[in-house]
Length: 224
Image (cartoon, rainbow, N blue to C red):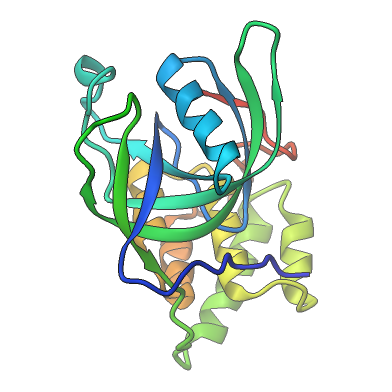
């Protein structure tokens, strides 16, 4: 069965809590285990679970290291996720599972009044338009996956059986495949599933079997 897309109030802007991480590009229709220990992100998480259980995953851009504890640059496209389960450790840290729900574009960051970052965002919806060439591209993508990647057979089968949409298929591949960060950011910013298919096809290696970035499911915990 395909993943549900979160319904949010119909308004032009929406306030989100930002959780920036280096080297992490999160996508709708995926799950991400996370571990929080910094005080600012513990505050963010505690407010989230008392409110709407929503956190927006953001990607720290290269050069963030010197400004990590302030407000380093982040990618303008984020993924809003919902906290599906969580546990608090004895020393006040949190482990939780975030389910990716919606793409969003940062309009502007809110002036800091809390220890963590917040932003106003524009929600991004998938483009339903499918060009006539999409079937051929999808066939090529599946063929290339079968030739070059191990560990994604169930995902391919679910798509071929009609159990998940092209939008879900491309988002799961975008998250699971070992692609360069700039490619993943391009895929996150792209709202047309057919265009995501093109990007994925162009980014996959020529036939030589490789493993996805993280074959095990759910993937290992990411740390802040």
